[in-house]
Length: 440
Image (cartoon, rainbow, N blue to C red; front, side):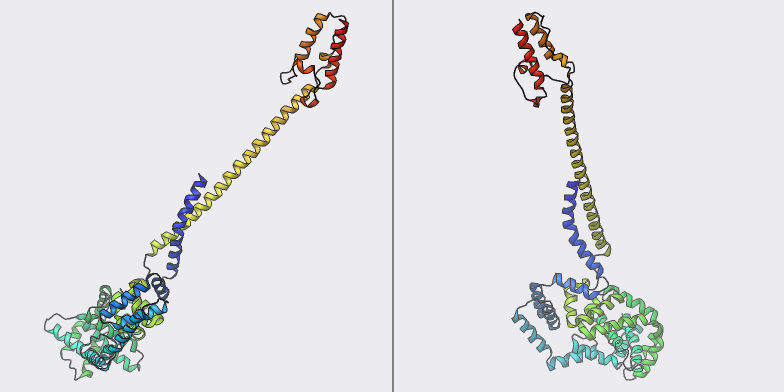
């Protein structure tokens, strides 16, 4: 039974230990988004996957994502078709033409909805000069004042943006990442790229930061031609001292935008469920740069969080430990049982040898102490017909049952001392028989 249990546990260990090792590695990576991303990419990226994603990005007219996959494949030593790489290069070159850049910049400046880096530059310029925030605040504020559906998220972010822009001027650019992050947040909100939980978190934060009634009154008379008045009125409605968490989130978004691009920042906002997730994406972007967007597209939230729950991973580790303990206990018990069986066998062999030796010693001792008178010759005066019958019973008769004398015929022939019969006794008996026979 211990041997069978050990074999079963060994087979179970072959299936459990690799998963437990993988679980241990993932748990050790749980606070390192860069290591998690490398682990996930190593298990997900292949030549066929990379070419499929690049073709899909080119079909969607997104050369930025295609180039990100090309860089990721090159960084992981995954070979792709040179013709496909050339197609990506040509698409990127067409997207960087002067006419396309001018159109994208103008669209970002006047609409606040950038599609690429150049469009985001236009949006950022408008927001940095308060034009974009005042435009958004005036539009949403007028809708709110007239009872039309208004996007309070965009209105609140515009108000916070105006306050942060004033801080940017005061600190000579120290709040620039937060300013850029708020621009990305507004653009993501307008285009519907904010994740549901992230939008809820931003909405709760804005309700604590913004005095909505004061902001509504302030934006009613806002005019783009009078930015100073709009800034003063809006700053009174925004409690900047309570905007620490939102400004920190905007700073993380701005850092992603600066290191990985606008689209990567928006993709990160779509995947994030809160400020902590965005902070992880910022750490990932700082390490991976332009490859960040391809990583987020390929593995999703697995790039910043464990793909499985820590409880499930710990369960694999626990089962592996139990399997190893059971295997060790089974091997220990099997060794003990084998040792016990061998020792019992040795004791049985020694006992059997002692019994045989004792039996042989008893037989030899009994034969050596046999009374000599039993083998003595009969008196000469006995009649001949009586001598032989008298001698035969005396030679064949045995007092002790453990002593076995040889039969009568054995006494008539000389025998060696190996069977316990002394030759001297035999010779004396034969001499007596001959003497009796001659007398007769």
